[in-house]
Length: 101
Image 1 (cartoon, one colour):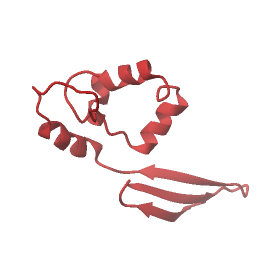
Image 2: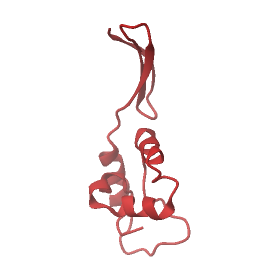
Image 3: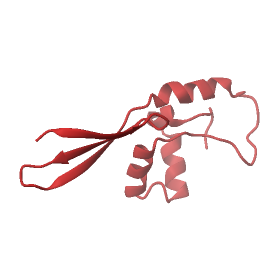
């Protein structure tokens, strides 16, 4: 069966859809569409690469859908694992600052 639109949040880019399966069960699908790379690249470019890191620095911006995936894998709750994940070049799009965490 098809899906029906439920809601959208333009601030987070999250849309929700309702699915009714052939057996009568239902599911709610959450979809997040936001250009993380563009937003974070803008912040990376505004950060002075020569400024030392202090006690409080925004180093990443992670969409909720990615965060919940990291949480399910145990990465979000493990500071060492999250640091490793953020420093992985494949995850650079989520970084808002150059350097390593």
